[in-house]
Image: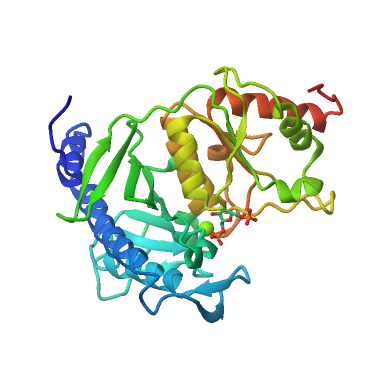
Length: 344
Ligand code: AHM
Ligand code: MG
């Protein structure tokens, strides 16, 4: 048994040694982020007791009702990150435009895109929720970051991660050198390395999709899901459907156990397919993590990380998880799109 205790601070410093050109700026940025996540975790755990239950009565840029904890998480991350001197701009699911670094603070070379509290409709019923983040390098000149700095393909991410506020709080992140998971020890207030070098199985027996929308799926997705029912996975286990409705929680389970998560576009109007999940701060960071863990991520037709973004809150179809399962899905999706039906 490995008895070494590794805090996230120690791990960040150790990882920095793999980057000879590192200045320590990135390590310091990540450290600031972990402080924000600890504060959010504390509030999430008190949600049933505190005044945060319920809605603010306002709507966000997507027309969804804002929950008070969303607002708290959004502001906590901003307040932890605006003055560190490492960022030039931020963007959040809860803000329609880019978020400038206040003029009184030094600007840095990194860009932070985040979903402060994903799956927030689950807060009131005590179901796991999460935060997601993506870090890019500034690519424009001048001290202030711009929209152009935010609109970079996922392949340009220097780091990405998520926190799941579940039965325990876990932070999982990658700096493109594999994936590591840390569990928050609430007694000492530290994230401790609990899941080193996460690798996702090549195939899983779990599929996660909101089946209530099956009539609106494209025919490739319909055929694929139909093909799993009553069958055994290549692991030899019968397929199980598991859908929490919290992307981070569904993703985290599948990453560790193997499986596939799907949120295809709604094809109610086939001329205007409507995806739900957002590219920059949901799909891209989770896609980088799953690829770094040996998995795969796709729209069905294209690798998520290669999509060139055109707007801050752009939505994409998202299918990710075990590489073998996602590849099989792509065959169904592309086969149906080209008119070749696949049998179950
Ligand atoms: P949110 O960012 O507004 O919380 O919405 C994203 C969430 C994801 O966590 C989850 O995968 C999905 O929406 C669930 O959507 P649905 O209820 O349509 O299945
Ligand atoms: Mg979200």
